[in-house]
Amino acid sequence: MNSIKLERINSAIVREVSYILANEVKNQKIDFVTVTAAKTSSDLSYCKIYVTFLKEQDKKEIMEALKSAKGFIRKELANRIDIRQMPELEFVYDESIEYGRKIEQKIKEIHSEE
Image 1: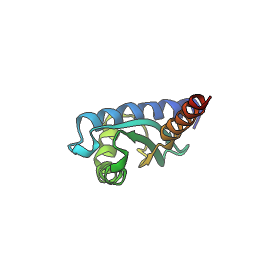
Image 2: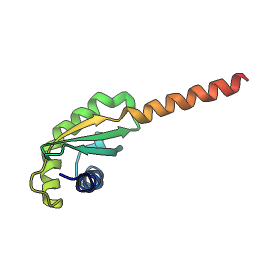
Image 3: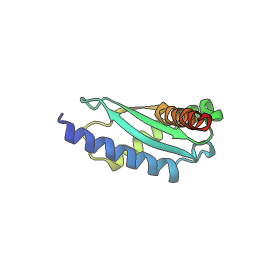
Image 4: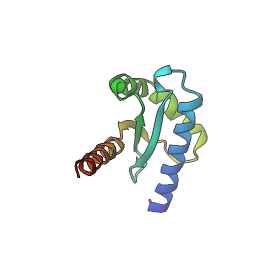
């Protein structure tokens, strides 16, 4: 599958999963989840959905809630996105934002020492 089509599918998945999480999943733990990216395999069998959230201390509970809502989200995606096969979904905590915060903090510390 060409990369432009995969990018379009990934973009649609991010948009739709964000909407589904914000408006249709009835779980309070998932309220402040932000979808940052989606990476679908070229054969459309698998999709990693990268998420982040405000309450990092509740990471385990939130990831469990996402895992339990996975079937509902996949079914909703199948109704909204017109692709041959809806990939199996996996939610992954996006470490890049946390990493960025740590780097930013280190830079501030260095500047305050000068």
